[in-house]
Image 1 (cartoon, rainbow, N blue to C red):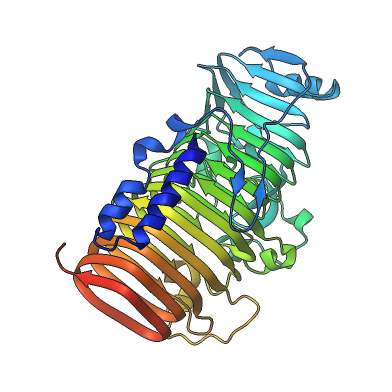
Image 2 (cartoon, rainbow, N blue to C red):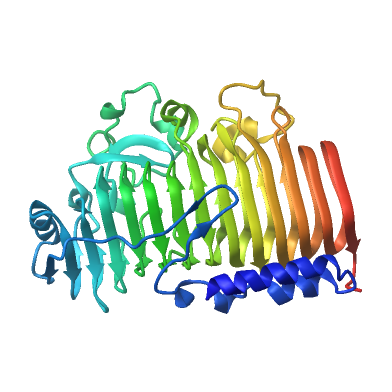
Length: 487
């Protein structure tokens, strides 16, 4: 039982406090989970109760009407879904290899992909028309939506051990908007119902995610494998009570091929997932710029546990679209493999929001570029001169802010930067506590534009042991050893 393992872990960690003779790297290496102990292969049948520092809830598997139907490749999936919905719901079982356009889930329906089944989506814009209400990169609009879409549904699920494959070569990909950032394309002053991108109103579209319910309650996604997405893979938006467990995602080489993006949701559990992605593996977002401020819905009460971010840009990321704020986020017992960044906090001066009250515990990182990274300015190609900290910006409604972040029990096997913080001069990063970290890397610590950063009970073995600081106050290091070689 995983709960017994946690009890044992707590006992070992408490024992650490009175056993300073044991090096911290050996302490952590002994108790932290490894790659073969997390991810989809290790998922138990039933989830455990969620216990976070901020909230707790019993995770209950959804139930559906006893009614079942089967759909074969020659039949219409949508017609079968609509028929089942008219009867009050049930389970639709997919068998064989299907080719289809967008499908829309209805309330009280479980779309179950049978073992060996494949749900492959078509590649042309007309396969996803008419346009539907969606949120793309934190901005509300009408476009292609998602391959598996739902709006306003309750008690829905996508389950089974089959495979979901996104669109191949066709107009969906060739007409995807890539020439600018979305806030410069979609005017925040335009009413949402007039923001229509169907391939005719403009010479581009906003591409479909693979699975993206919006305004839904009680969403359960379990066991399926996803690949070849045209955009982000799993994107619950404005949803409550979401469980995503045991999914396998493969989007290596796909730009913006995020794995799981949580958009302005409340009570979300992500567990035992294995991710190899073309962008961030797991991310929490909450709207972008003025449009995100207008909606003003946070992502909160998020728990991520026992996941394996094998490859991707970020093992776990907050942002960069967080206008509605990310808060009460708890990530624990995860392994990050060859990701560019382990834990990453992203904001941009013109995107608003930020985050607070976040906890990260018992994380193993194997080979990352940056282990703990605050990247709050971005790049000039996205935000122009505002990416330069020397470019003066007055504090305004779009100024983001991060605070109250606690990180403890982290093992960094290899990194170029163990801790790298780039805050914002007009809105410094505040109140970060880092405790019991072992880090092996090229550089130890760089901090810009921050306040009240506390590092304690940690050991770092780095080629460059210096501390670089710019506009920093309240940086404290307590019982921290930094050396060029292991003792």
